[in-house]
Image 1 (cartoon, rainbow, N blue to C red):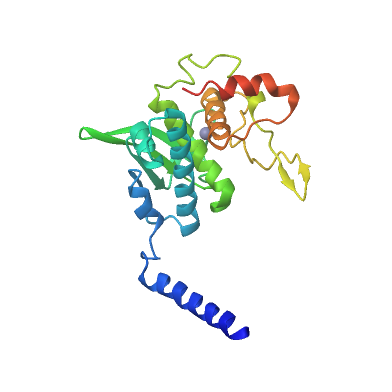
Image 2: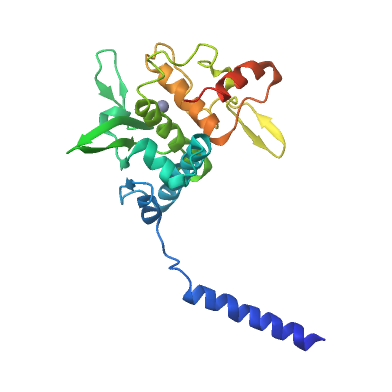
Length: 242
Ligand SMILES: [Zn+2]
């Protein structure tokens, strides 16, 4: 009885190795896959950062395809909404703090969605990355989804600022609170931004856009506030995304 089992295993191993030898190229890069989405990325990003961008683009494209319900692939839904997106490594003064006279200081931090860049009748959304959260992984992915949320805001006509977002949606109560789960224990560590990438700071004039981008994260991942006290806010936000 041992012999047929062994030979089966050997055959199977041979079959697998022939798949590896004859199958599609195994060194396909994130940049190559991203071309299907009309997304291009700077070569200087690390591999971890590139995979996080791809993961974010794929998740947003999948969610848009589901919402639009036009039998599109994730890539087609993404292209039909954004047309094209460029992720640039390096952000300059747009990712530095500003003093009260508007003079930038300190190191580059975070990212900046620069909106639509016209380019000879074509164009693209430009997302400039100073630093990516965790340099990739799941939180880096969520960070990139947040930036794509800003671009979606612009793509839909600056909807966070131009009033089409009702007040019962325009609330952070729908968002999953910051913090993290580890071994079944929730730690409400305010220094860890998991599902909210950018809580509003005092006096910040762009917080409508930041609330929108964080609601976009919740919408993309279907990750909403689980506290029953916030059920009304969650229901309003879930049904709203244009
Ligand atoms: Zn933001």
